[in-house]
Length: 244
Image (cartoon, rainbow, N blue to C red; front, side, top):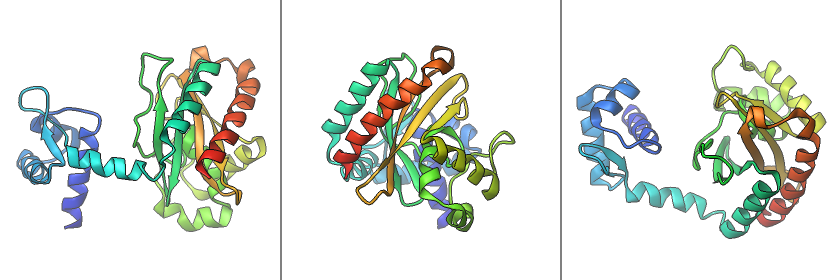
């Protein structure tokens, strides 16, 4: 049963960003085509998958969308949050976003892509704790060294020889983030991009979210980092008031 659920989740996750045929899903996920057809049929019966806009393709169904929106509705200040992200993007001329802590997961909740023809991040995406600005900025304040070691096997990590893959190495990265108060990513999730993220705390000083700016790396000059971070901290404070 667990394996079936895992495969169904993989199909839904793939369809969240792609309309695709059964053959394309089979090849992308390395699943037998008959298995893909069975999964799709079951998900269609639940209205979690629907027919796509092109012939023989499938897409996310209304029930999957409803479930996703029910998670998002926990953060019912949507208009106020989006307004802050739009203002941050306008002030910096970069794409702004907000990710939240959900248990031991980091999930992108809002993305404002008004300053790039490229959509860097997808709302609803789960991010790793060892790569990208979101994951590192939240992880640095969610875990101390002891709790990181305790939970290391449970958290989502991006596997790469270029990234910290053990608790000690990741804690060293987190310590440097705690010292400067923000994280930087240089193409760790998407090549050619650069991102900053500043943690957001509640009134108990617990990390609950992270606000991020991202753009093409050659547009984001190192000499502008300090002033950009100061702007982000100002918006992080506003977002903290809204979320808290």
